[in-house]
Image (cartoon, rainbow, N blue to C red; front, side, top):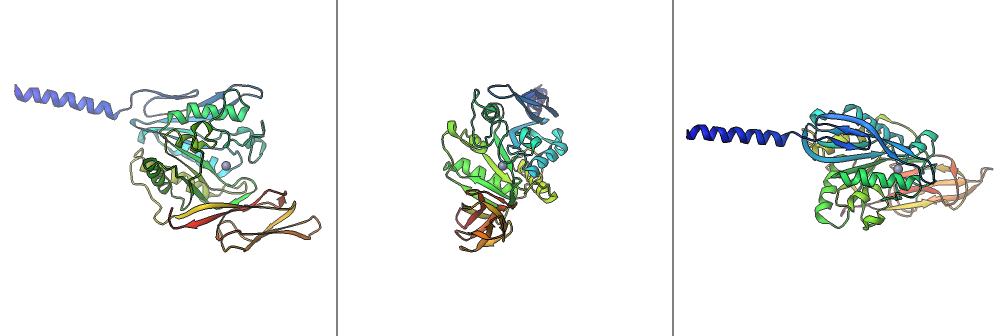
Length: 352
Ligand SMILES: [Zn+2]
C-alpha cells in the first residue's frame, strides 16, 4: 500500500514535470500566431496617419519547450543588405522543434528604403528608422512603426538584437556594440551576449540615453526597459558577402546557445578588441572623395585617410585621423558633400 502510494506520487510528479517542459500556449505578434513547435509568418500592420500605412513582415518561432523570448530585428536601414539577408537565412534554417522559448524576427523594417534603394532614411518621411524610438502612435510613418515595434516586440521580449551594417556609401568592417548602462547585472548579461555573438571588435557604448521615453535607438529601447539588448554590424556598400552573412547568422545561433534556447555550447570571443570611443571624421568640402585606407585598417593619429578634389581634379581637402585606432568604416563612394562622414575611427582600450 505504502509502495503504491509512493508510485502514485511519482507518477503525478512526472506528469507535472513533463507539463513544465512543454510550452502550452500560442504566441502571437501582429498577424502571426504560432503554436508550440511551430513557425508562423505575418505582418505588423501600421495604419495610415498623415502619411501612408505600412506592413512589416514578422516571423514567430514558438519553441516546443519553454524558454525566453528573443527578438531579432534588421532592415531599419533597408539598404544594409547583409544584415537583412542574414536574418532571411536564420528564418530558413531555425527549427522550432529544436527551440526552447520563442524567437520573433523582423527581417525588414524599412521596406520603402529597401524597395527604392534609399540609404539611411525612410523615404516616406525622411527619418532614420533607428533614431525615433520609442515612437509615437500619431507621428509620421517612422514614429508609428517605432511605436508598434516598442509595444508589440520590445515589450514582449526578454532579449533583443538589432542588426545593421555599412550602408550603400559605407565601406565597413564588422563590429558590435556593448551598451554599458551602469546596471551591473544587465551589463554582465549584455557583455556575455556580445561575446557569444562572435564579432571581435566591440564598441563600448556608455553614453546612451537613460530615459525609456527618449530611448532613441532600438537596442536602447530594450535596455532601458530592462531587457538586455545588443547591436551588431556587418556588410558594406550594398554588397551581400557570404562571410558577412555567415558572421551574422552563425553569431545569432551562438547567442541562442548562450541563452539556452538551442542545444550546444556558444562560441565566445576569446580576445575581443574593445573600442572605447568612436571619432567621426567629416569633410570640409564638397567634391570627389578618394580613400587612401581600407575598412579595418589600423592607423596612427595624423595619418591621411582620404582626400577630396574639385571636379577638375585639384585637391581641396585632406582628411586625417584625429587619433590612433581602427577604421570602422570609410566612405565607399566618390560622392562627397561638405559635412558628410569621411570615416568612423574606433579608439582601442584595454579596460572596457
Ligand atoms: Zn543601420
